[in-house]
Image: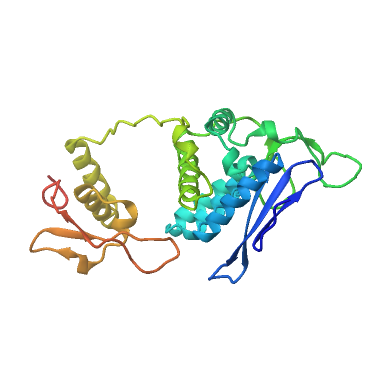
Length: 304
C-alpha cells in the first residue's frame, strides 16, 4: 500500500480506503493541516494520494468532507453584515437550515434537496413533518401525564409553563420573501465554499426559490395627504411636523427620527439623511449623507 513522507493510505473496516496527507500548519492558528479523501478501491486511493500531494504542494487545501453547516459558520465569520442582519441570519440558520441540511456534505448537496426544503417551507414554516407529533415534558424515560401531548405552537422558545397561549400546532406556510432570504443565505455560503475549493460549483444557482409577489404602492393623493396633515397638526403639532417631514422627504421612520437641527439646510431647502448601521451601535455610519430635496407639499403650516 502506497506510503510517502507526507501521506499514507488506510484501509477501513468497510473495505474502502482513506487517504491522509499532511499539508503543513495553518499560519493563523498553528494547527496542522490534513487533507483526507475516501475511495472505494486501492487504485483510486493511490491516484487520490498523488492528487492530494499536488494540492498540498500548490498550497490548495480543499476540504472534501466539509458540510453545509461548516460553510454557513464560515460565512457568518467572514461576511461583513450589519448587526440586525447577522442576528436574522443566525436565527434562520439555527431554526430552519441547520436542523435540515447542516450535516449534509457540500459535495453531496443537490439543487433537488434545496427545492424540497423550499417546498416543505411553503406548507409549514416549522417543518413539522420532521418533528415528533407528541411532545414529552422530559427527554429521558418518564411516565407520561397531562404535560405530554400533541405538538404545540408555544408562545416562546424559552423554558416556560404552558398555558392557553400554547395552542395545538397548525401548519402555517412561510412567506415567499422569507424563503427567498433563506435561499440567499445558502447561496452565499456555497459561493464561499466554491472560493475555498470545498465545492466545484454552487448548486443553489440551479434551485428554484419562490419569488414574492410585487406589491403595488397605493400612496395617498395630495389632497388626502393635505387633509391628514391638517387634522394631525390640529391635534399634535410635533407629530404633524414628523409626518410632514416624512411626506416631503420620503425618508424612513428611523431616518426621520434621527434628524437634528444641524442636518437641515434652510438656505438650499434640503435635509441631510444619514443611515444607521446596526441597532446596538450609537454611531451613525454609512456611505455618507444623502441629500434629499425639501419640497413643502402642503403650503403653509396649518393649511393649504
